Image (cartoon, rainbow, N blue to C red):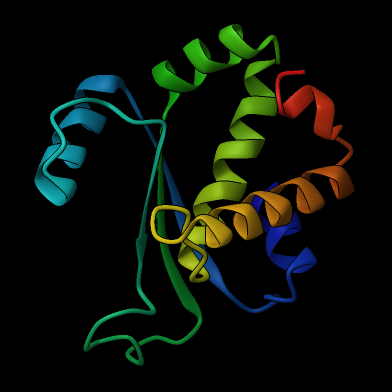
Amino acid sequence: MAEGILNDLGYHECELSILLVDDDEMTQLNREYLSRDHPTNVLAFAMREGEDKDLHPALLGDVVVSTETAQREALQRGVTLEEEMALLITHGILHLLGYDHEGAPEEAVKMEAKEQEILARLGLTENKLAGE
């Protein structure tokens, strides 16, 4: 799935890692890197930022997904775990590529639109993923 997302975005020769964790480990990572004392669904650690950004240009970074949070969110939204994971991995990859939703509202809209565009090409409907 991640390879398909990267190819769709034109990143054919890039690599990333995907780490699946439980809520306890996600809470530790969220606390350590974002000073938030709770689990979250996905974190992204970009390698194309900071002073070492040119060290390995093909390496995008790491996407970390809490499978426990993903399962809860899938149940709440009425989608399968596979669909929720597709959304979260897409979201994480977009973060690695510089998309952000926590700053300006227009950036959040741009990122969500890109997520929906990619997921539609993967065969997942926008309405189902939006929880409608």
